[in-house]
Image (cartoon, rainbow, N blue to C red; front, side, top):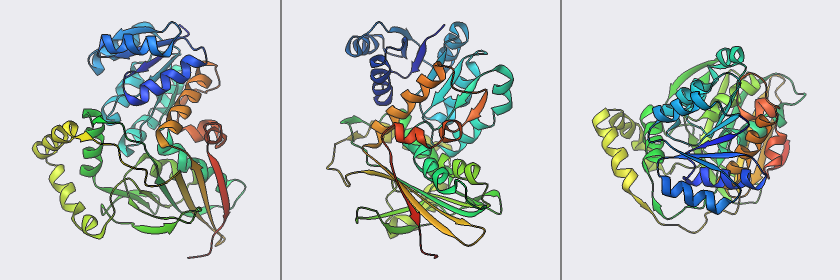
Length: 358
């Protein structure tokens, strides 16, 4: 069946991806929990999309196994609980793509490489600004370069907030990320790091100031795989990085790791209403700094617009390519499968050059 199924179609990401794919003439199936919202979305995007109502991950998995779509686009978070089971639910010959950027979700999906290859499936994780943004810069910097010993990547998205509640999926991802604590690669091994550590201030290419601190994101794993570097750090500009906040983050992480407190925090955060704020910067930026075995240091940037728009463009493009037979069996990050030009296709612009030795 040559259909692209969009899971969580009525969410913000699902709606944007569905609109892009509908405009390209793809045969779509919109999957969600609310029949009325699915019908409204189908009418809005045009074409003749089908709708499927499924109220749990298990129900979605059962429908996927029975239908065997060409491509499954998973926008249902937290991906720590949905990526692996939904990817495995895809029958042989069906391909899968998600928007995950949680470290455990990305590594869990990539661990299915041999299983996916044997089944003739192509699995892609991190198809968005999170993962592809910094991964694409790393791949650009390391092309035809000597072995890399140290890498630091930083994601600085500009996100236009939608009014409304945060919701359980995003709340779960945020709390789980904090509760898991920090991570980095040292001597080729993934080790714990102090949450709030690896803090750095820098100047963006447009002259504005930015700061980021270490975070356990999928970008960490993508940078390590792209370079093979034994020392890798991933930073995020999404977490408030004031000195006082950095000081208490380890305590917050320890408390949130306790199931009663963590679950309570998720429920409270999910009910929190978001009020759109003025943009803090004009562009989204992804940064990478690589140190070669010869002592050379290079720094590069990718600039794009609003991060969610970039993400929907990336995911839709990956889905189209998989439906067109451009993937290959196994499990991949988007840059590893399609190269850094995928980011350019989605509207990214690269600024590359040498950097002064620290």
